[in-house]
Length: 123
Image (cartoon, rainbow, N blue to C red):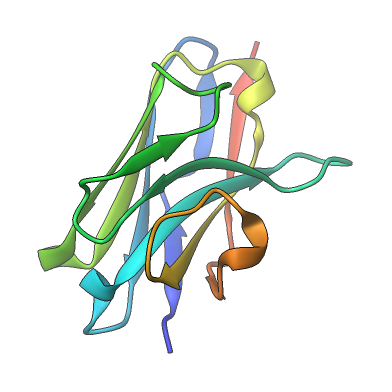
């Protein structure tokens, strides 16, 4: 089993940066692909970024390309989401999720989920 804990959310002004962290409990963290998803009030959960086991493959939603960067440190069992040039529409609860095998942007493919962290961007 994999337990995931997100941190780093908060209130930030539009145009500013924020870095989210996703810490995993498993000793076999390098066996898992990890993704970030987000969900705004009244909207469906959407994919943001995904990374494979060694960081060699990264995927991004079009809405965040060039602004967000996903990375991982397997020695620390942690995945990061660096968010720059934040926009009001980035406001949402951000979740990290893990799955075995390759990276994917599909919500249904992920077995393990964190509790989420709120990101609020003020305009």
